[in-house]
Length: 226
Figure 1 (cartoon, rainbow, N blue to C red):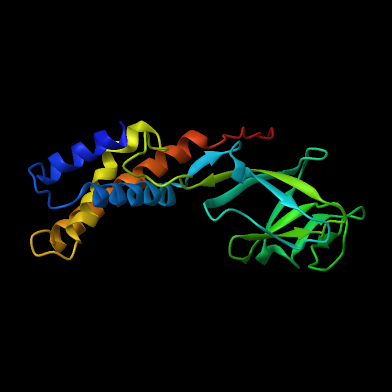
Figure 2: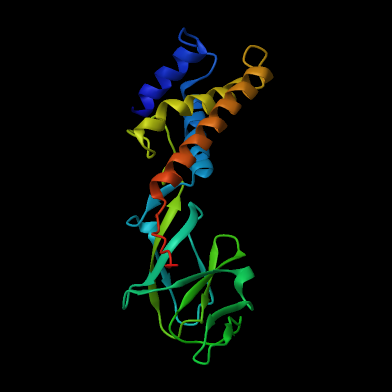
């Protein structure tokens, strides 16, 4: 379904098919863009390992590195120089017991200013940034696998939507929600806006659940003998 197809579907469902339209094409495409972004935020986002935003350049001595604001979650990271996978830590993990050392004792991940080859990225310290651990001695490129929102906004010139086609028709719920919230005597309807929002949220919850089931990795459980 193209954005133009979805616009037609929206007008049919909200009964706005005669000129002059109550909602302009420009408004409808803005609703569509927001609906696609909301769907991604609520369902986890679009998986991406190849677009430009999945590679970040780090200069020598650079402590904090910016990541694209369209990234919702970093799933995996590696140094491109040697394809070494990097650990991903939340800030709350720092100064907490980590892996066992050579003597069987728990090590503590310490937050410090040491330099060396990057071994991991600390998430959550600053908005749209990661902290290199340790701070790199030489310039490095890091490749990411991420979940993200769409790369481009939906406009009248857009040829396609980024999310899977099976979800396209359900974006109309959020589009109608926004349409009914328009501050216009003919358009505004709080009750219908709330109804459409509930339908959209329910569909997104179902879509997220199906995705989690599809991506879940089952592990075999070994049972000891009696």
